[in-house]
Amino acid sequence: MKLYDSAGAPNPRRVKIYLAEKGIDVPIEDVSIPKGEHRGEPYLAKNPLGQVPILELDDGTVLAESIAICRYFEELHPDPPLFGADALDRARVEMWQRHMEFQLFIPYAMVFRNTHDFFKGRIPQVAEWGEVNRKALTKAFGWLDAELSEREFVAGDRYTVADITAQCGFDFFGKILKLMPGDDHKNLNRWYQAVSARPSAQV
Amino acid sequence: MKLYDSAGAPNPRRVKIYLAEKGIDVPIEDVSIPKGEHRGEPYLAKNPLGQVPILELDDGTVLAESIAICRYFEELHPDPPLFGADALDRARVEMWQRHMEFQLFIPYAMVFRNTHDFFKGRIPQVAEWGEVNRKALTKAFGWLDAELSEREFVAGDRYTVADITAQCGFDFFGKILKLMPGDDHKNLNRWYQAVSARPSAQV
Image 1 (cartoon, rainbow over the protein chains, first blue to last red):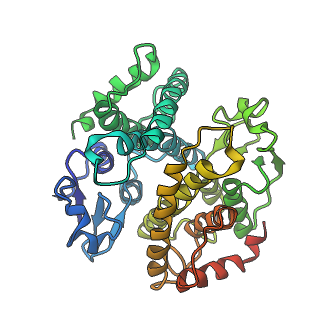
Image 2: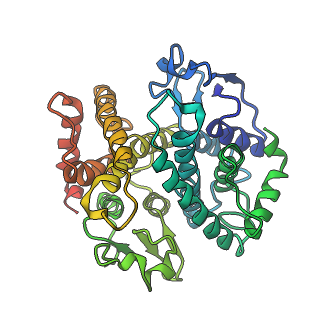
């Protein structure tokens, strides 16, 4: 199998952190987003949506969507569980993974694609929509900070894929947009330092 | 347990269709979005994000996010499988469920919340962002139509949660926005008629 990655991009990094946490080694091929390789052949034949990452299996089957790729590995390598350990825990991790996407990762992506120079001339940008999401993020930081006063990690007392989603959001969008939690978000900062100190965060 | 629903809203309907497909009966309590009950107590104490649906378990545990709720029931009632039948199939269903969210359901929601009168004065609307998503949807219809030329349902030859997501998108946003696939989207229309004819679509 082979993972198609794009160095620096936040979605493929979610898979790479997941694999590092699991100790799984997968050959990687880089697809350059700045060069537009994700929008041309031969990549589009593998993923018509042009998104990175994909996982290509030995029989040519292609899986897109970072979380779908991680779930596939979770089925093959269930330990340590990063999607939850029993029925309720798996539902709770799913809930928090989705909360991290819809409250954090996607609003961050909205600010990035609608306000950052990288996309100028590449896609239609609506700066005002970026600003709506910038405000939503400030509220989300407060909400997440309060949630993290009650437990060590996003979905409970164990590191999960929900932490990976949030962490990749802050590391990429937060830093590039200079839109990070403030000093008063003490629980969020404590959590961010903890996940950033894990060996998997080096990928 | 109890499912907090909001009659007519697309996200709780995803759970209700799922439950109907499984033949699972769950007591339902309505939370009125037009009356703002989702933004006030006692609902906010259960779900600080104010979103509907939630599933409340007998011990008071609350699960939010429609897909997390469905996954919880899938763990308890695995047959018939609506999230896939083996490792690769589960990954494929996850991929298609997410494709239906990111290519269809969320762009639809973007058009709705940014252009529809219902939200006027309730939230900041950015009509231009609605139009960007309206265009994206037209492309998505063509893409999904081509995908459905190759198989009966969204994720393969079996009805899954990916179909439910798409179906609820068309039924709610598509109809209210008058933004439905055209006559030339023959495969998409064939699929839409088939899923709409299932008894579960009556909920």
